[in-house]
Image 1 (cartoon, helix red, strand yellow):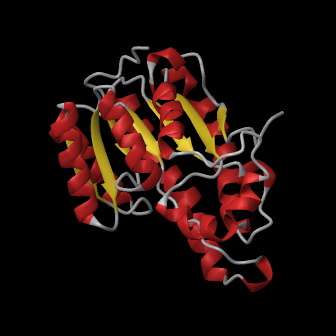
Image 2 (cartoon, helix red, strand yellow):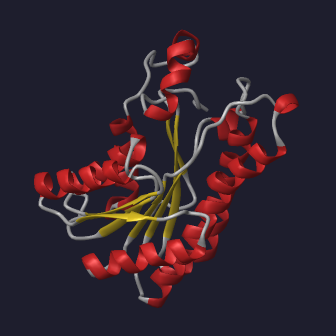
Length: 253
């Protein structure tokens, strides 16, 4: 299926590793120019950009930026326009997944998790939609949420689940607000993936997770990236405010 993403420009937050890197590669495979937002590990971002540019003959630009700092976000968007001439799609992928049960959780850990996983996507989306509206771009925003947004957590990730639940509701609210401008806002809810963020947890509890997944396996990040690219395409122009389940059946309903 041709997703008609050729020559469009996507900014992927947290794009230098894990799911973010898989999303960047899938967009590049579809011919889109990719702006790889990162905060840590510039070498990984540079290497990924070089790989995508060489392999897929697209523009791939690494940009450092904290998703909770307005100036950094605005600088990232300016860089996207400067290097590729446009900005069409935002994928809010950056996030943290700390572990602590509520009774032991530092107040600061709660605040940091909410700030990165919920406030950051709000701040980036706000600036993206203002750019889209000002430039008459019928843009797409895809927020990465989680099955935990619907199931909660029993394994010490209540702050993460709360932030992702908030992001689901924010996705719906923003979609309602900007539909009149032709801007689509959606979310993708992964289950367990094989990424660096989950490596330690899977090493300790993979069998436990497998029992909760009807398809009986842990997903690869590429499988989630396919759904993200679809939602960014013109094939999904009539989808907005929805959260797509890519959990191997954990969210069946």
